[in-house]
Length: 356
Image 1 (cartoon, rainbow, N blue to C red):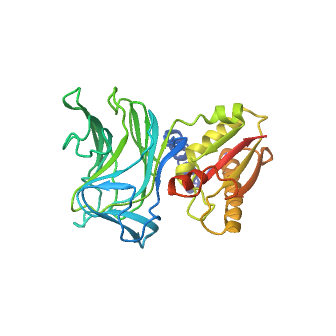
Image 2 (image 1 turned 135 degrees about the horizontal axis):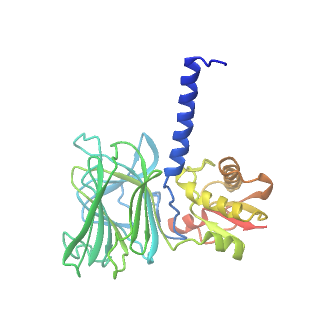
Image 3 (image 1 turned 90 degrees about the vertical axis):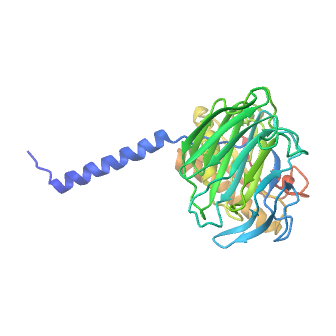
């Protein structure tokens, strides 16, 4: 009988345990966020000058557009306690998503995020004080604390607060997070980076139209946000690709002026991969599009590289045969909206999938 050395046995066990843990992580991963189909509000804070308050927002306090050395780009810093509301003019619908980047900062040198509220409100956009300390006719609030995110909801018909709860999660001060909320009628899911933090089947109280997203802060907090987007409608990717032959996706995001795919794009690409796996004869063309900012030739090249990146992700991560996928870049040449404001530019930055 061949005797395996103890060291080799331990190494083998560790390897098997590592593989098991990797598989376990894949099984328990619940990052399923897919952005809404239609962009109804977008602000990357490039329309105004550094030091200005962004024109698309309302507040009863103060704030300014800044830069932050650790993380490049434009950031909106909320510098005083009060409410901050993006004035989205279009309706959110029953199904919508809210996304933004967040850097928690404060003046007390506390190393975690606390005392900030992310609130969905059924109310009047022109009257932020409606309801007083409990905003609107109904609402649901998420409040990060030391090591948990607490939530509660309320409504006029319930005479105030109704349900509440919490989930373990800590936001570290000075670090960047991608925050996302996915609303499907009463259901709310909250994500931080690639983690689904909360999934509340009855998070919103029925019978109300939720049309306001509100951030509430205190004086000692100085949070930064960037790349704020609200998108409405539940994308039916399978039907659009298989039946209509064309899918426009805003769920695949890239780093600025780069073909590097952001992690929050995972669920959208996974859904595309599943459609291809379920339809073995389906072939597609991936087409990248940009807005008109910057040099036209550079935009064309960028759109080509981005479409190739999506193809490589489908192949490398999900095993889709490269022979089933063509790629193309159109740059800024096929805009679907005028490049005259940030919302329309966001609509033009997209990835299209064409059935061949």
